[in-house]
Image (cartoon, rainbow, N blue to C red; front, side, top):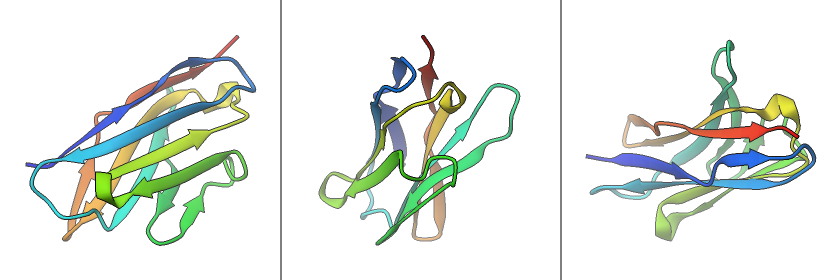
Length: 113
């Protein structure tokens, strides 16, 4: 049974930085694809970033967020800089391997003064 566990969320002031991470546990090989999605209150879940060999970002976070992966640790990271109140959301980790999608339970990131 594979589980994705996010960590590192919390409260940060506008303009600040925060990093979240997600680790896959369980008997498995390395994930092929990692990604982050987010869901703000009252809104639908939206794509944030994805990494296979290269990275892709939503326009709203491009230049501010950086996704990276550590295959040895089966972990993906999302470094978030220049945070804005509109970045407030529950951030979900996504991974894909061997034809199966995996999702984390989500972690709250709040950007507020």
